[in-house]
Image (tube, rainbow, N blue to C red; front, side, top):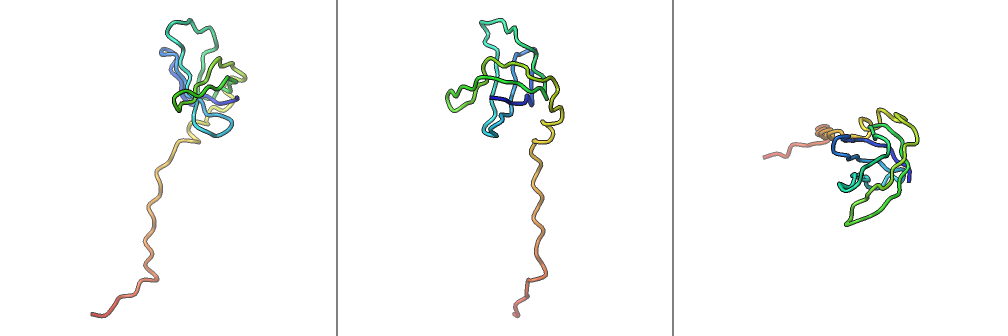
Length: 98
């Protein structure tokens, strides 16, 4: 599956990937017993990976860098924004006598 890295921590060997199918995010975590020799994953990088589902989580295995900084602003574009408060409707409210 293809995806774009939206968050990463090089020191901890972790990354969060937005998947091409627009499903749940995929998580990459370098196993502690291995020496990850793959590319450094940075936000905005386009990657190809094997998707595995485990305990209702999507895991990205064996990520390969397709294009560095392909989508540098994607994380900001998909971050949720607070919903706008609904504007109260006052032009169709009638006062009742009494």
